[in-house]
Length: 348
Image (cartoon, rainbow, N blue to C red; front, top):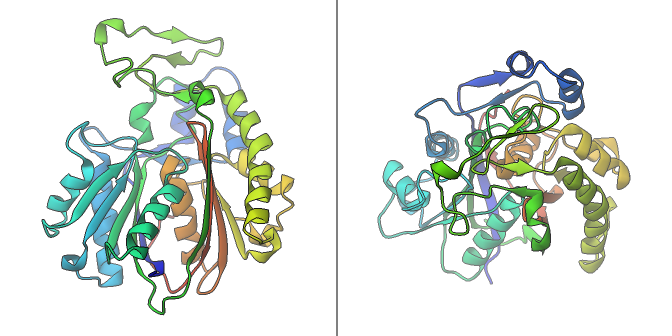
């Protein structure tokens, strides 16, 4: 088998910024100021009117090409993981082939996954490389969650930002094992914890059936936007994820102490901090990257890895454990040993 590796990453966000001053103006009621301190987010980048998530993904890809010097004619697969595609049909991967000027005889498909998307995406890319089916994969984790949230939902608007990460996956230069193991889990019985009820075949979009409801905190909800049971999600994460990680490590004959860096989906500072404390992870092995970009859904995990590499928190031969969790409910971990990864400029 051929061992695959991440050899390049680049990160882009929309120019428009939604800062906490605007959040406080939009949601003056309740304890929003305290909520913002707890989640640890000061600003988030969101799409402007007329802008799509693929516009941001194109920026990330172009930076990846510029930084790595890879010949785009050598790209033989595009895998685009998102919950906010440009259209229901065709796939956004198809659109990206044209926009990036790539060859027409390539594999191109979309994946739909939530905050665990980077782990799922890397499993797919690793398999394609290991089998010899593909040699250079351009993989995207890109979400425009701001488009999926009611603008007056004070539980979700302050948390989420938009962005895209382009990742280059190809055979490991020295055939060293980079992707050491993957572990996945899902519990579909908890699907209602994080859900957009309307828009699929179960409940097709129908403007006449959209009704606004307002909860006791003044947050507006409708069936075509994301709904989150925040208390249930928090309970699930703190009771499930630490146990899952311990079991995954045991199954793969490793210990948490074996890792140089442990990265979680950047849901919010409070949740990430709780997981680190429950697992007794030393401060120097923790990674927080949410203050200026918000929770980027599927993009948050690779964005945190990109930033950790960029600032030198990890590098060649570093062993990194990455875990995502989100709607489904879905949760997943992967263990990687980094080689030389070229990264872009990042987002300050």
